[in-house]
Image (tube, rainbow, N blue to C red; front, side, top):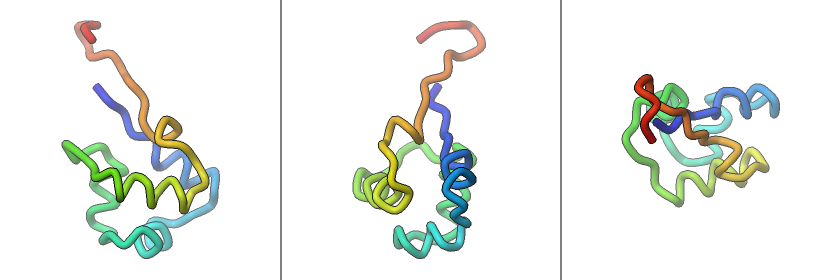
Length: 72
């Protein structure tokens, strides 16, 4: 499973959801879904805009978390 650390990075950078959504060009609703890991995919252009705004790398935002059975 892929975990999303967007909330952590936003808190470290002191960026609100409203600010990030506006800077990236997505709705606050879509950003909320992404922050909570409720999306099945994200466009590279959106990921790139988030990284540019938060001055981070994609690997800072996404982490691999083994599922409960421990399979990959």
